[in-house]
Amino acid sequence: MSTTVSGKSGTWRNWAGNVTAHPVREIAPASVEELSAAVRKAAEDGLRVKAVGTGHSFTATAATDGVLIRPQLLTGIRRIDREEGTVTVEAGTPLKRLNVALAREGLSLTNMGDIMEQTVSGATSTGTHGTGRDSASIAAQIRGLELVTADGSVLTCSEKENADVFAAARVGLGALGVITAITFAVEPLFLLTAREEPMPLDRVLAEFDELWTENEHFEFYWFPHTGSTNTKRNNRSAGPPKPVGQLSGWFEDEFLSNGVFQVANWVGRAVPAAVPAIAGVSSRALSARTYTDIAYRVFTSPRRVRFVEMEYAVPREALPQTLRELKAMVDRSTLRVSFPVEVRTAPADDITLSTASGRDSAYIAVHMFRGTPYRSYFTAAEQIFTAHGGRPHWGKVHTRDADYFAEVYPRFGEFTALRDRLDPDRRFGNDYLRRTLGA
Image 1 (cartoon, rainbow, N blue to C red):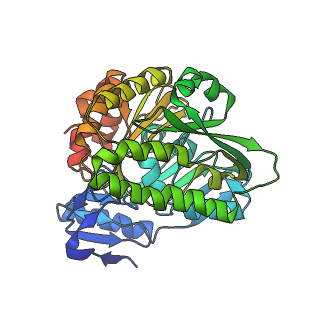
Image 2 (image 1 turned 90 degrees about the vertical axis):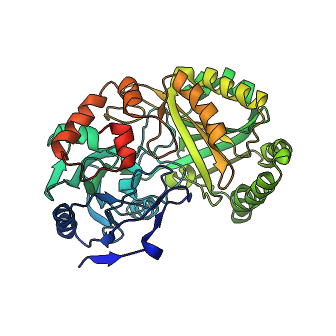
């Protein structure tokens, strides 16, 4: 049976604390039938409906003044098909629980983002991705979807069934319906060897094509106010497993990357002039290391320091020039940026509104510590990214609108036409979708 739940004073907040919403009611359905009934009841009451995951988006994608659907009772694996190499999972399942459950079954997703707190539907609907030369975002690993549409009916889609919906709903922004289940392609559990090492930014940019070509998963972090980066190369391994030691793992991943980094950001927020010196120390704090473990443990890492983030996908060939422009902007400004800039890649995919739709992409993510003014930095960065035809991550801070998206997404009209058909009354609409998809 579904439960009606409410937060303090009926207020919902996202993880970063930069988005709040005041829904009329919150519902946690225990079945697809109960979710369908909740959508129909919302329509009778003239209320809009949004489903929310763990709130890891920095945009108001899931915010609503109507009915807020919480999917915490829609969790777990429905079925595993070893012949087809797929797993069907309830939409509210956190990625963390899915990874553990798959590993227990000797299975794995092919690629992952760097955190796994999100629900599977929240992560895919906003285009969450990791880094990969050949393997793409989490949404690109979807083989089938089930969603409740605006009239409360249940629609299933795949490449063979309702293919037009499948093309769009994998990164659907919650605009086409409420996802209730996702079927992912999976493969036998595999090991990755991670090689992390510092490298000068100039060298990384000069050798970027080579580093990308030679590694299945390459990413790096540039520390603003320095010429330093920390690089990470993940490649498949025959083993044996050699995970990070418990003590060294705690020291580097918890003490340095979370504990000391938190304190450094507190200091930087209180005394901005200290940030460049702190950045210099931070860039030298993490030493080179190599380790081998099952895939999701290598792809992901804990992120306990809260921040606000903007990320843009630019054509992969534009990455070196775009990052040089970003560095030049920071160097000549009075900005004090205490968070590293994260750079990843993805191959082109065929999802209508995926940030990598139709083009090989590089991602540049800029962050600011929560509570630190971020608008001037993000505005200046966004001007650089959009000059290169950048596409903002749907779940991260940006100021773009439907007119801009119609320019940078060749199939944007396909998505909006499908939305007109599936949700003509905008039952799943909100202010964010009005700006990004149009009225």
